[in-house]
Image (spheres, rainbow over the protein chains, first blue to last red):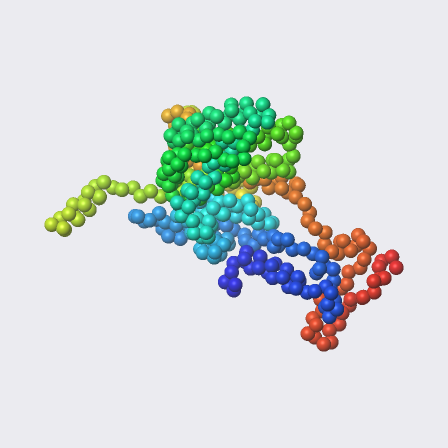
Length: 314
Length: 129
């Protein structure tokens, strides 16, 4: 604990003081107590206040042949660490910059629940549940029968038409693009049965991505509650806003009829928007060439190396 | 100006608007931040020229995701700040509403033999008595 960062220290300090106050019995006359130590309930730890000034991105390892180089984030002069106290180190400068911006934007109180890029990067570094690519793929595919688009509501005729008009084209695109069959259900409790061949095709597609990218894709799909819409945005069949709007079809239908509550519906909408966008951004930064380091292989050097190795064997 | 260039310019303006709140120093500008310099460097390396409106370069795609993420977070915090609860009343405020006094030194150390307390056990010691 002596080597903890100021963040962890402040949280532990709050927790320890909570425990200390709770242990005192109000009925014991040897310890006359004020009501403030009995009636105050400590539901959550003290909010973390901004304890740093500058946020900078620093290179940890420089890029060289065969190595992308790594970047870290400094809060003042202290290096940012993950919840498992590992050094925050990513091989992607864009991810480091996005994380640094999240910390820089914080004002008086550090709102950790809005720092999705930081959370994703920490999860990729720590991997607290020891997940693998295969386990993440299985989790995403086990959620596929519960996809939003596969469930139709037949109570309301207008909603039924809307779902058919807006969701069916995307479902047909998905089935055509990946050569899979996904049945829909209406008003049923049991989820639809997806053929094993379809699951195998989708598993092969998902396993082609990196582990870090899959974490981002899973985060985005969970935010949208639909793998089909997430893949639609990924393959550029849909824009981000279209994907978000389609995932909220039933909710928007109900709020248009019964009214919109800003502190519930709009809050959820923007939370979903930020989560989905951060997930897709994390996926893209760990997949596509301008951001993810892909070593350029020089054909002449490769040929020369192969000639040299064969001549050595002779 | 091609469609891709127009879209890229629109995206740059949106990124500038969203990145402005991250600059807290009064003398510093968004153009001086490492994030903006990286965005400009990426735009120069990956010019957003597209053969058709359907295809989109990875740089543009990531830029649009980032604008959406920043906007979503900003709006979420705005609504949260407006509607968040003030939290529980402190026991002192509650006691004042009910008309009771709070003791001054509520947790004396029982290990000290000569510990003194300012606590008044009289239950009738209220402001109105």
